[in-house]
Amino acid sequence: MSPSIRVHLADAAHLLASAGLQSPRVDAELIAAHVLDTSRGGIWTYDHFSSVQVEIFDSLVAARSKGVPLQYLLGAAPFRQISLLVGPGVLIPRPETESVAQQAIELAREISAEGSTASCTVVDLGAGSGAIAISIGLEAPGSRVFAVELEKDAYVWLARNVSALAPTVEIVNADVESALPDLNGVVDIVVANPPYVPTALALPAEITNFEPPAALWGGNEDGTVVPAKFIAAAARLLREDGWLICEHSDTHAPQIAELMAVDFHQITLHHDLNDRPRWTSGRRKVGR
Image (tube, rainbow, N blue to C red; front, side, top):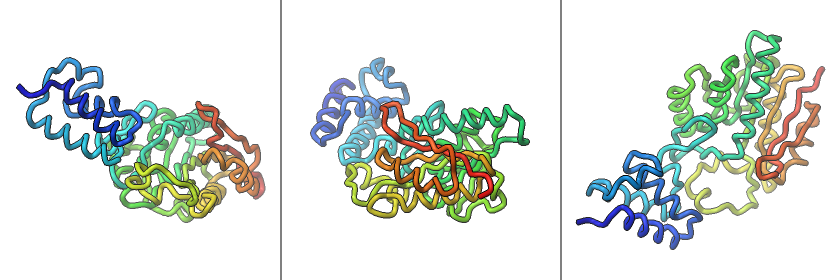
């Protein structure tokens, strides 16, 4: 008889630990759940893999031991109330971005409730997998949401996720600097999660070897060149007193505030659940 699932899990966890991964047992169990098409807790109702399942399990564990992100191997990443399709070419959504989406959702609901416009218009710049745009579309259904993504590989994942989860979201394959010219000066909320990693910063190989460079690096040593472009695009798109919500690194708050000060007021720094300064909001100045 072939080894039990428990034996396979123990061997896999040992291999992943030897590779230096932070959560080897959890990763092994999630891979097993994926192979068995069950929940992580559901794996304990099985005694053995089939011969085909053993091959798939072993190949996925081997790939994980080489640093391939778990989300790429499983083909999905959780975000708020949804599960997003992800794979090579698209940034894996991070938990801290859920708080950024939350502020956008709350503002969109408020604007829609006020009835000051026919519908709240929201633009997600650098939409990637569509995590923020789709969440707004589902959780603030009175909004008209646009998701802008330049990179073609990421745009494929964006299109898949929007089609599956929130088909009312309008997707645009364009550079943020020129996207949506018909919306100049009329958008209520812009959400931006630009590439902001300083080129001088060393990231784990699991990120730099597999996730798309265009979604990571901020364009210069301090990582603010690309965020500056996103902030300028937001200023172009927003109506007077419209909102910009911009994610950034926990070291960028002063630079982002300075960049926003030209065209925005009520600039406010926000902290994530780990009390790190991770995004800044502001309102488009009147008369600019």
